[in-house]
Length: 314
Image (cartoon, rainbow, N blue to C red):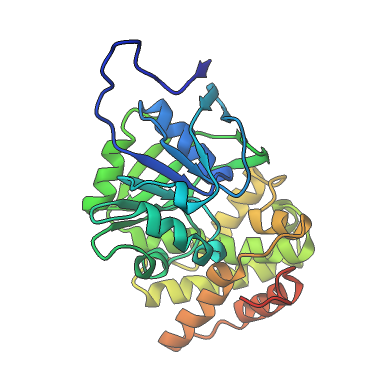
């Protein structure tokens, strides 16, 4: 099945649709663009660093093709009703010129990034009357080439139970990619961060797939680091018992043992690493609450040391 971007027939008036821009057309931004088209929307602009003819998202149901102008200069961009931010967290500052061009009063800015500080990270960079929507992204996807995404599962976007989250749920109604409105988004965000910080951090330093964390001595380190995250999460108001850590790790290594964390792939490919919002944030929030985080602090130090961008400083 191939789903192209819909266009009105000759002489037919186009339906009123929200203007949608995707900033960062990597694995997540691309997968979400495909889901938006499957939900009946048009993507009006891809904001990217490199040109491509069209986006193809290969998913369990077939292929979705998304044709939209590719803008590489913010001067080419117009105000949008919805801006989906798909760049890595450490690339957010570089996206500021796009925010200036795309975001105005009432624009919904959907933050498709890792971490637990989406709003604090993005809100200062956008219009004061924009609606910033933090998203806990649960999507298995990989960018295999410019304009080509391989998506393993339809995926889930977890959002707060507020006006912004409900608006995104309504926008993507009908898409196979589910939007889950979460009464407890804090727990959902810290639940994912535990895996990103501990499993992702250790497997990145070992430069291997998730499966390595299922065996000792890596397993004990990962579980210990996850328990630190759980302690900080509880101090932040999340519901995160220690016993959940081992269960989550066992489930992930069993179901996705061959999968590589995106941060491990970045190190393998010589790209900058996203350690600030994965590991450093654990120590920062831990110190705020007086919760010790020695394993995550050590992972932060080591990841920063091997970060290809470390010599540049961020």
